[in-house]
Length: 170
Image 1 (cartoon, rainbow, N blue to C red):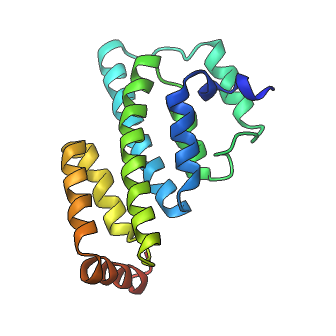
Image 2 (cartoon, rainbow, N blue to C red; image 1 turned 90 degrees about the vertical axis):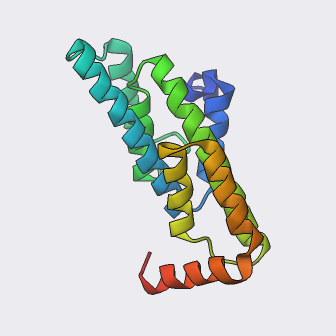
């Protein structure tokens, strides 16, 4: 299989999201994968409600079968592997919407992780979860506002959250 025949190589935005996702810490990848699975499940429930059960088709079954070869960059993380396999089963228009949300969420989380690295802080899983939740339930602009507020006062809030996360084993 050539590098250009991977399902996500045909859309530069999808490729970029996957590269960005792979660059994040594993815990952040897992949270973003869970987010992707929730979005995929919503689409599947909506489709089932509207049209009933529909066959995946031969092309998608072949893609799923090939995914077992574990040659893609995200295959090492079982959460991202599962989320991406769910994503490729959806119609292209549904994939596009989910990729848009995942792209924005991945950028926000990457910005937060970079901020923490720059300030020698441990990224808080709570902050990452809050960013993703804001994108999912409210809007990207609300998530950006939240990220800005976290970045303004890193000395107390972010450090305290990181210590609390460590104590709670998150």
